[in-house]
Amino acid sequence: MPPKKPLARLAAGELEMLQMLWREGSVTISEAQQALGLPIGYTTVQTRLNRLVKKGAAARTTLRPAKYSAAVTAADVGQTDLDTLVERVTAGRVTPLVAHLLERHKLSAAEIQELKALVAAAERKSRGCQS
Image 1 (tube, one colour):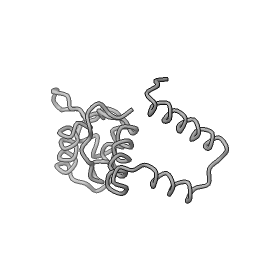
Image 2 (image 1 turned 135 degrees about the vertical axis):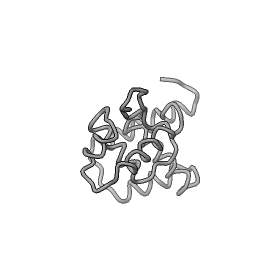
Image 3 (image 1 turned 45 degrees about the vertical axis):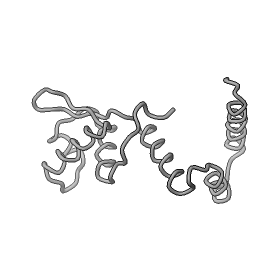
């Protein structure tokens, strides 16, 4: 299921910050700076966290010092990125993407069964049946 509100595209540094929030939970700017373990300035961390809040990917408390936490899941971000990829690369068509993946990656029997079930569900949905 897609996220409730479409996510804005995240820059690499913002995604790195969000991954840290998933790992660490609720953190202050100083705690985030330390958790990243990179030579990155306090104000840079603050800017990235505030951008995540503005984009709806993180939440900030009103307490002082403010604490930041992830407002979206990794699945939400992945779904948004995949939707963007399909739109940009294949003009919204799923078949070329699936064909490419099937050509390039070896699938296990379990994955093939899972794909068959997904195709069957898509067929039912396209016929107007809900299950």
